[in-house]
Image 1 (cartoon, rainbow, N blue to C red):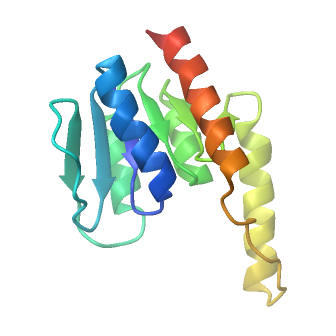
Image 2 (image 1 turned 180 degrees about the vertical axis):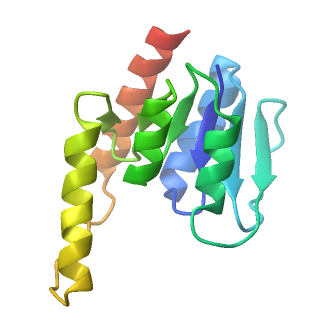
Image 3 (image 1 turned 90 degrees about the vertical axis):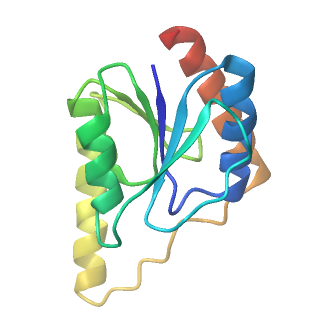
Length: 148
């Protein structure tokens, strides 16, 4: 099992959790981004640079993903592809995307995008909080215990 990180938009606090977790659990963790990220030295941490462009990192993650891998992403369309391919998708706020909830999440996301495209101000996600960080840490611990 590997952990893939959609790293362009991942909060720093989540990256820091993943740095520590990779070494503690000895799990290969690959950060995928379209700009260079400086990672701590570790045999368990890897970086994959992709070309700039919409969904290029997503495509690379899906291409390399194996059944049973874990993907950290807030990107709902990417999460949908991960679930479809047999992976596990977790967002940085600790929400697990599953076969049971991904269609609803994708539908809500698409609806909100239509509103924004139509000029409606929908606001954004609330600021990332300490509670979100804790929820993520708890969720990834549960997932890794189950997957390993």
